[in-house]
Length: 350
Image (cartoon, rainbow, N blue to C red; front, side):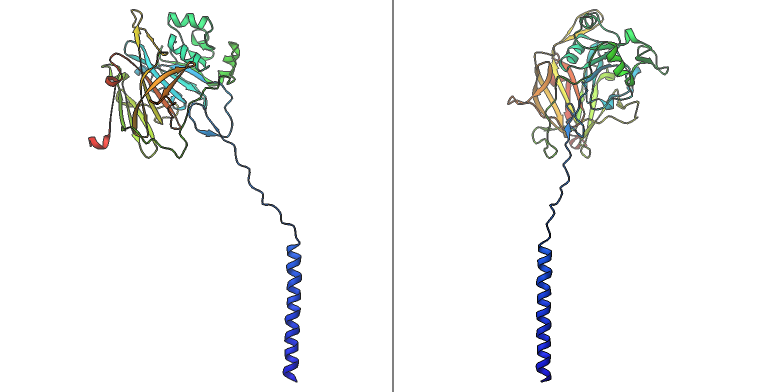
């Protein structure tokens, strides 16, 4: 009898628990399931002249400045911030820089030097606001004819342009970037980015797979080593450092060496046009070119497409750049690019 009562109690308990379980499961399943809220993906925009991704789309037009490259003007200010630096002969064996700023504007830019006709043509093709201090006779005429929006230190020395006391003229004129909007307004120029010029870039996952090993590059303009350049590739950062006249190229504002993702050399026809050694450079006809990326080199061509100098592969497609800063040399067709540029694998040399 006792065993029978016990068994009945156990069965009753099991039935009660089962009933409770059914009710609990039913009440849970009746609750509405709230959808999981996904975090909105941040929209990133590539900068036109570096290909690096940023959170805000670029709306300011490029700014191009002629920067002095005389040894007395080194180290220059602001060049580490330039998206692209074009280096070319101005007169004799002396080179100058055209520095393009858009993704970043440094506090000061300089020393600023005078304009040349082909500097203005490059700025015009990129729809850039052009900064110079002085001009050749040909450049003066072009600027007066309004070929490109510009501000010139010949007319605004001491206002938009400041003289450094640490250097002597003509190596001491600097454009102060907090004057940029006022300078553009003064000459009735817009700083709105209207001609949407940009380069083509590799994706982050892509890498250069073709070409010759080249982690040491030497670009030669003449027997004057002050204006010849050497580049060294760092595989850790995937960038090149630059030296000229035996000195590493640094930025005066930061004290740091510049770091470049791409080095290009374009072969162009050069003509001396006066007794001061000033030149005319043909930036329109196209020609041979070398590109250096990720310690590799390959030969291609350059073309002027709608005023923009563009690197083109042998198959006709636009050459891709690695995201980051770019340095572009113009070298004369005589003696030619093969004579002006040498490269090597430093591991094989050691």
